[in-house]
Image 1 (cartoon, rainbow, N blue to C red):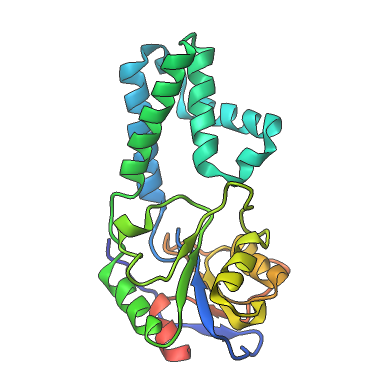
Image 2: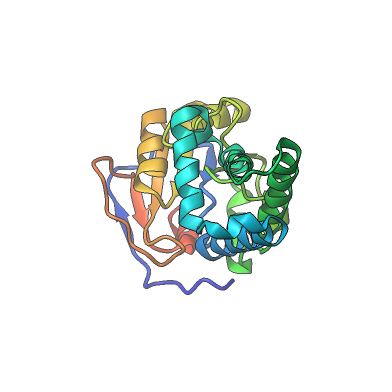
Length: 246
């Protein structure tokens, strides 16, 4: 997918201190995530409707309602998108009267379908070019709340590792993944520069973890987001400005 860049703009709120590594959010920072997740969800529910006809009674919104209800029963699911989607499918199929075996098999079938379509793209060449150039100067890592397959979309060759929440690791803006990234890089939190599109998850999250931050606004959806109480060190409106600024 080609990203059409707005006119270049850099706003500095705080002076960046020396840093030793750069972390990137993935969804909506390195690519527009919305069309891929939307398509994956459509394919998932179409598959459910074919193999489990009773599910045609529910809309996607009703499935989402079930997932949010499960969050109240199992709060740990909030921090694990994969486990939450599996639990949603499994519980939904049980509620429609399918057996435990059918629900388990159906939920796994649905997850396989979703994961296939969710990562069925490649990061734009111009974005990979930026990352490759930055990677010649700094170690690059990914810190994402999502579950994209980094290898399939072309990021595994330009990033040392990519962290996902789940299994006791909380989503941003919690500090878990920032702290883990710094530990694996053997650096102090202040020596990590995090770049992302979300004012809370990325900017406030990095700040609370003791890291420096750079805000991509608008995001790859070409949608501007409102600043919150925590400002980044720097705000940019197109990714390739990193090559000029850093």
